[in-house]
Amino acid sequence: MREIKRIACVGAGYVGGPTMSVIAQKNPDITITVVDLNQSRIDAWNDPDLDNLPIYEPGLDAVVAEARGRNLFFSTDVDQAIEEADMIFISVNTPTKTYGKGKGQAADLKYIELCARQIARVAKNDKIVVEKSTLPVRTAAALKSILDNTGNGVNFHILSNPEFLAEGTAVPDLHNPDRVLIGGEDQEAIEALVQIYEAWVPRDRILTTNLWSSELSKLVANAFLAQRVSSINAISELCEVTGANVDEVSRAIGYDSRIGPKFLKASVGFGGSCFQKDILNLVYIARSYNLTAVADYWEQVILLNDHQKDRFAQKIIQTMYNTVNGKKIAFLGWAFKKDTNDTRESAAIYVADHLLDEEAEIVVYDPKVSAEQIYRDLDYLGTRSPAENRRLLTVVNEPREALTGAHAVAILTEWDEFKQYDWAEVKNGMKKPAFVFDGRKILNRKQLEGFGFQYYAIGE
Ligand code: NAD
Ligand code: UGA
Image 1 (cartoon, rainbow, N blue to C red):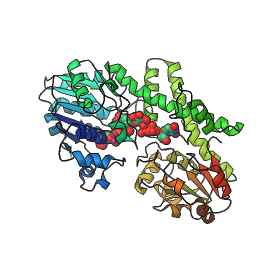
Image 2: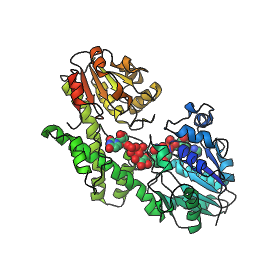
Image 3: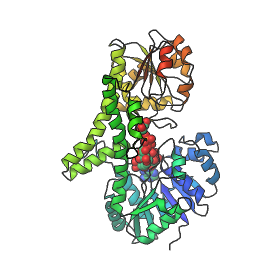
Image 4: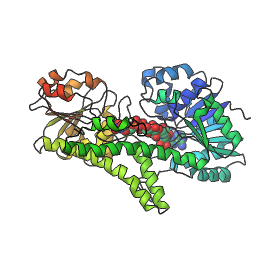
């Protein structure tokens, strides 16, 4: 049995950072170096003040505090980490392509390929290369070809080990995973990775499959999860016109043990770096095999999600007498879900863009997202000039600044603190009639209406 003493992980992002921190925490005898090209990200991982870690995840600071400097290191020296490692995780980003063939759908594998070429160039002894990034099915074949044909004649074994953590709960998800999935061909390499996880994960939760099943299962898991959100969001619109209440419907169907209660919370639409990207990728793969019905089926999950974001913005405009021009709308939340500072594909971005088209004055408060990030998200859309975005949208550090004098409040992220506000006082400080548009269904209709709000929540 091959003993793994040193691990390198290329990519110190939302997955590489937390995953390696937990592997290091649970395997004190293995030295793990997480490397990245991004100097400021690595500096932040090395910051003595744990409040400055580049990623906000509850509980992550304690894990990093335990392992960092003992057997967990962060560095920009990619070559050295690769050279010394027995096992190399690839955890770089795999965004949707923004150019060329497959633009807007296929996964952009340029970072993966660069990584593979670097590993091939540097490796002087046999390595196990682990795909941690989410990849199109059959990527391992391309990786193997690059490694074998551009390397120094050493042996590479490729494993697929997709990550299933969700942001905001990364640490508990890593500590107590529903399952760990390992796909591969070489039994010895598979066993080497199994042993690392066995340090804390029960053996019966470590599943092994062939490479292609593992790669595809990751895309399918995200597609099924997103499909549940789009399914309940579709029903939320039907609830609004029929008098049914979507929370009651979720509860009623979720009690069926075959359906189950999770991922049935209607919302302003799912966001995050992966659901959309991975489904688009699945759709692209299906189309590339001429499986049109399969591709069309999964594409609907995205189309419905776009519709849900659009519909929420429309509802705000219609309810406010068909004009939001010059009206102050307080945005509570910008992150794609609570307990993360990640804003990738957040519904808030698209709802804001829609309302800014109507010349609304948006004031955003999010407890963890910076103003720079918010403007970056809006500027990236290219809908209007950066100067226009800054003229129409302001970011504040205190919720009161957003709420005072507002015509309406729109809740875009389900941060717990929003539930604790003194909503009677909020109402007093607002223009009348005071509207609340609850895109996350976190407030209590009876109470809000009691205070005199015009309250709209998805699916009611
Ligand atoms: P990220 O953008 O946060 O991090 C990726 C990092 O890789 C960046 O810091 C980038 O600088 C670095 N990088 C890129 N190319 C490099 C190279 N050649 N050498 C060194 N560093 C390089 O991305 P992420 O959210 O951590 O996602 C990584 C992968 O994991 C993606 O495939 C994603 O689909 C998948 N995934 C993400 C999540 C999540 O919750 N974010 C969960 C499961 C799976
Ligand atoms: C998701 C999956 O849950 C992870 O298993 C997976 O590893 C990860 O994608 C990935 O591959 O990146 P994440 O996107 O971090 O994790 O967060 P989720 O909790 O899945 O939420 C995704 C979006 O769906 C959020 O915007 C959330 O608000 C929304 N959502 C979720 C709902 O609107 N309703 C729900 O019932 C659940």
